[in-house]
Structures are given as C-alpha cells and as structure tokens.
Image (cartoon, rainbow, N blue to C red):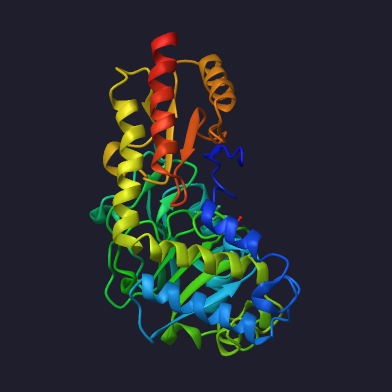
Length: 362
Ligand SMILES: *Cc1c(COP(=O)(O)O)cnc(C)c1O
C-alpha cells in the first residue's frame, strides 16, 4: 500500500505511520475550519489548543509539575548551545561542560564566546567510546551550570544514569533520546531537544525549563534569545513553526497511547538488543564502537572488517528496504538509529540481514 522503508536515518528520521496518516487525513481541513493547520493563525483557538496540549503532554510524560515550563522555539538545538550561556553564564561564574562527543564539543565552543568555561570531564581520548564515570567529573569552583549530552548521536553512547550536583543547575541536550525511556526529569533545570530525532519533524526545538531559571536572562539580550520572553508569551512571541508543533503534538499523543515512557523504554531496550546481539554473536565480524556499559539504545554504531564490506552492506541493506545505515564520517562504518518510531520489526529485519550478510561474507 505505502511502500514504506525501514528508515534508520539519524535525523530527520522515521515518524510513526499512524501519526503521518492522521496528518494526511486532516491536512486539507483541520477540525472543520476549512483550512489546513498550516493555514490557520497562530493566534487562532485551534492553534492555541495544540500549543497547550503539547506542553501539557510533555509535562505529563516527564512527570513534571507547575515549576516547569515547556517552550517551542526555533533555530534547532544548535541555537540552544548559544542561548544557554547567554542567559545563564555570568562574569563571576564558570560554565561546566562534560564532553562525550561532537555535539557536546559544539555546545562548549559556543559557551567560550560568552565567558569562562571549564571542561568537567571528557572521554575524547579513544574517540568517545564511553560515558565518564561519576568520579571522573570535576566541577569548577563556581559553576553557573553543568551541561551534558544525554545521548551521543554520532558515537552511539548514552548516559545510563544521570549524575546530580546539588544546587548546581543541570542542563542536558537530549536531542536524540528525549522521551525514549523513564528518567527523573526533575533533576534537570533545563532540557532541550531538536524535534527531528525523537519528537517530530525539524523546525521546532523543545525546551523544558525550571521556572526559577527563566528570569535570569539579562535584559540586554536580544528578545528572541531570552527564555523569559518566550515563556511569558507561551512560545507565541513571534510566529512559531505551527505545523512542526502540530506534528510534535500528534507524536506525543501516540507516545501516550503506547503506554508512555515505561512502555517505550522496554520496547527500545528490546529493539536495541536484537542488533547488539547480532554484533556480539558475530565472533568479531561486526565490532561495536561504544563500550558495552555506555551503549546507546537510540544510535547503534558498528564496523565491518573492511570499508569495502561496509559499502556492500549498505548497498544490499538499501535494496532490501533498510535505509540510512551509513555511519557518520568521524566514526565510519554503520549507524542504525532506532528512535521511538522505529518498529521492532525493523530492528528484527536488520538483525536478520546482519546474520545473513555475515554468513555470505564472513
Ligand atoms: C542533531 C543533534 C543536534 C543538532 O540539532 P539541530 O536541531 O540541527 O541544531 C544537537 N545535539 C544532538 C545531541 C543532536 O543529535
């Protein structure tokens, strides 16, 4: 009917089929308005309802109360790299960064432009194959905040448990694993994520922020870069990316219908296990990039014995309807992104293909 492939792209990435179908059904006439959701005003009650439901669903899924706000911003996670130090890094303080991959490096490099920065831990040695142990993290004397990247999309590592630093605000880039498993979100003062991996299409960035952080923005900052302005205006200070927020809202409804974070966490665990088992049972034909206790359940990175075999693997997988498996150039090899919307059957198909490919080429 639809000729859909199993889409292992890292982002933009696969979306739930049911969500795409619902968007298709209501594309021309949203809730009897006679207009597409793309054509209605962002001040219309229909859009305000989407905006409010999406905020409420995110808080419900993360078990957060009235001391948090959810903002729908633009500029991608990359703009958050800049907004965070602009809003929170004061001259007397230091911004502490834990480096676990390319995205945390980028976040840290932006902060350097605005003040003092301290690298609290780094696993760059060995090309980011792991997450640091808690006792490797050494904070500065006066941290304004600690920043970490919960899942390293390129290297395929993921924090299995989060550290806490008492009163020091903890900030996380969760672009590639937000809402993929249960965790204590109240540990964090700010969580941000570009939507295009686990939440919806590109164009919107979700920011979950503790109320007490909102008013720290220096009044001299450009309005569009101030969290307080966006919060006061319910993310409607300027025209938001309305269609992207609408899609995120549908994805959140879908996620609740799946049973929320506990259920999706178990599902993601089972999906990743199929592929990791194929790696671990290959007697070294496939080698994972990440150390076992740092493995990501969202981005699975592995190599084959030669680049020639990697090319053949990718080409054959594509022919069989499994696309987007070529790894990032800084790691090489293959990367299977297995976000929430990737069905178990997709991971099973890939694991079966891996075994078959090894049998023919091993
Ligand atoms: C993709 C990604 C980004 C970049 O997101 P943009 O929305 O393109 O700016 C940042 N951090 C992580 C962890 C990512 O996976």
